[in-house]
Image (cartoon, rainbow, N blue to C red; front, side, top):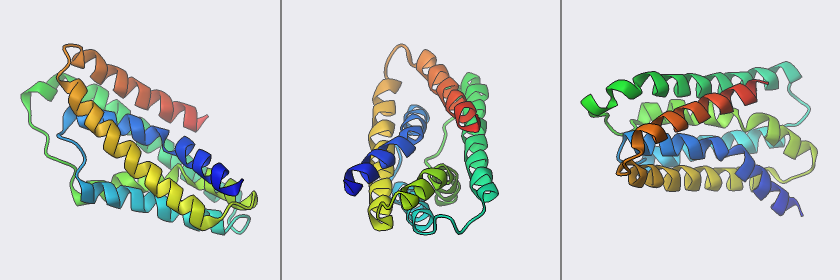
Length: 176
């Protein structure tokens, strides 16, 4: 039962990765393997560590991590919404290693509260880390590829706006 719960929690905490992957796919040529491994590595690392140490960190640190992650997703959504108008006039390079680290840490911060809850529930930290890492990688990989395919759609302008707005909504919901 613990493995199923770790899998379900991993899917839930990585849904924001799916939206970010679509957004990046619409703007870029996809997420290369190495940056995706870095992002998913941070997610797995945070999930494993924080499911291992439940109760040993103050609640304010958990809240601060969750708020920080939510604000970064919100800021990314606002940036994407504001930069939409000039996206046709410029070529955006692929995700750099530094960008992957920043994105990885911000996405991994969203795993902290559920990982602590998983640790309190007795879910194995190794299972939680592995499933979170795998789900992160798969969500980003497939959603960025979907974004590339959607980029060729005549409705791409609406999709870019919708994906940016969904990121903003996800950030606001996580703040609440």
